[in-house]
Image 1 (cartoon, rainbow, N blue to C red):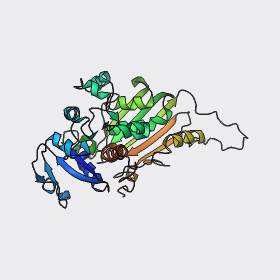
Image 2: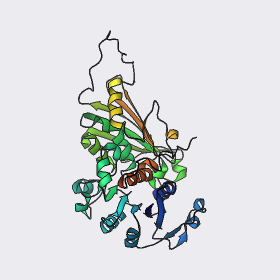
Image 3: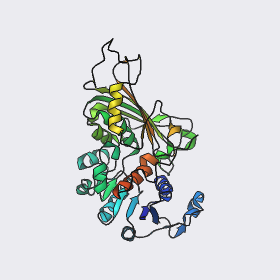
Image 4: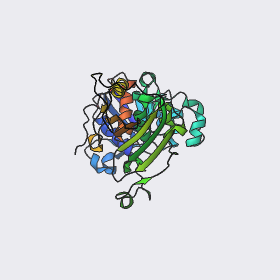
Length: 352
């Protein structure tokens, strides 16, 4: 059994991660910690967990690391920096904050602020197995989970890495992405009937997206938008390639001819299937809908050619499963030599 602990249990990501770990047959929960609670039954804090005989403590971080095989950090941005620096190398760590997702101190400073431990950025492995990090994750001591917007954006663009001239992505996220603490922008009476774009071409997840796509900031237009639902991210975009994937088939060749308007294309699908053929949680779908992925670790993607030669991309994932806790468990599986799908593949979407 893997002794797993969560530091920062009381936020949405911590709670979702706990739900997933409880269903994992190779995991035993060791500590659930919070600075605000000392030896309090978790059911007192969250009544929906009243059936669990688990307590939330304020156990010292060094003791948590010493007694655990893996520690998940579900802490706010900036708070995780000191904890990762203190515990790196003492146990396996998976950080769900934004603090170590970038490996370049200058880029981190541009999108966040000056990093307190710039040398450590190079030692933490980026936890996105679907975009080329599987081998590194398996050998990692500390892993940084991707951002939710960032992960979906990467999956949409990654098949075309280094062949993208321009990419434009419009993505809508649910209210849970804003975290547990309410604000004017996330308050239900405002959000319930509203859509609002924010941080256009300034969002802090942009450097993760362009790194995976092999493009610069000037080659991406990214419009993050808040939507009137709780869970999930729905994204769509247009990609202009530097060079076509394959020549158009000549009439009379006996092959299927391009359909007018948006269409699926043999060469396009061959590339996508080659890219994600071994990715167990990526599903290529004819249509994309949030209801098909919410509550699961699956990400649904669709790729089509447009009539103007652009590629239309669409995708959806659950921001606090695949975009947070689910990816963290997936990374844990890889770090401990388990099947990547262990504890996750049978986690069906909440439908309807």
